[in-house]
Length: 201
Image (cartoon, rainbow, N blue to C red):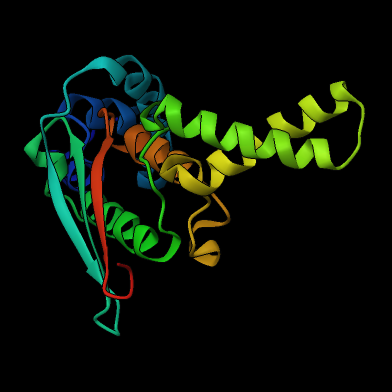
């Protein structure tokens, strides 16, 4: 099926995918734009996985200030190209991350960012709590590991379910990051964030 240059451009504007990828997806989908987007997402998933190690040197800094004016967040979200960084989809994702950080107050972006010292402190506390329950030692160890996983879900941004569960269907920030990486075909990285709270000393 012949695909018009206008259709290819429109698909590129919607997805941020390359021109040839858009043309191939439209041909595979017999001109059906929605199906072509699905094709790009499926292929983008594999492409994004391959690109995981590629430099994400473009991106945006997004912010969110709560209506009270007492909580504010700045977040840096990076991708590979300025083209993707300028798309509404990418900017919307960055804003959603900033809003989530304001509400959920994570301490770290990823599990790798959690210092070993912080883990050890938490593990010691959890061991003491488990020991006071009077359970056998092998049960205590399982309790500690389970509670440590739960603690990581509480403090690590990528492990948290987005606070707007209606909009994001209970997906974690990592799942949402993977989705936008798949739809854009680029490596997408939440680089860092800062959260300011007037009530915190």
